[in-house]
Image (cartoon, rainbow, N blue to C red; front, side):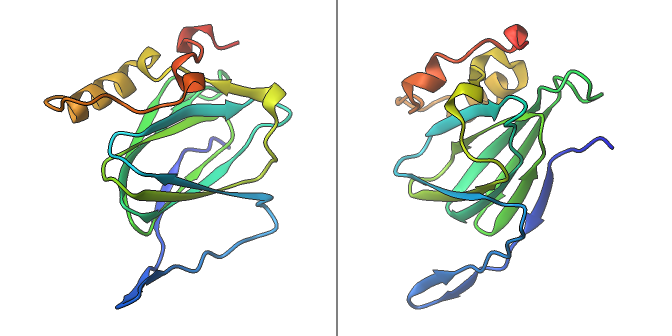
Length: 168
């Protein structure tokens, strides 16, 4: 069965104190990650782990707004090379299946993201695909950031990722 990313809405309950969001878990998820992004145009990605430590992810925007990118890197999948883009707001949940590189760009300062993974982090299996080596991702980010005087904020690791065409 060919899997593709899937976007859903999670309830967010708000009152005068802020917000509360329950997240239903299953036995599937082994680690929860929280990403707090202080500024607009923080880019994290495009990350994946190779077999046998590949990860599926469930990504949820707790606060703020972002654009999420899922790039199929599984050469046996008919979607190989296809980019899925999702504009995500508070309460949106995205399932990212195995075989996809994943990343996001914040569109508001103070964006908070929670993501669950079904495999523990394994540095020796980790890959980072350079965002600008994927044409659709590069075009979207260039379009969204044009006219602004500040640049993307990203880690050195993300800047030094491998080119999409060099995926083994």
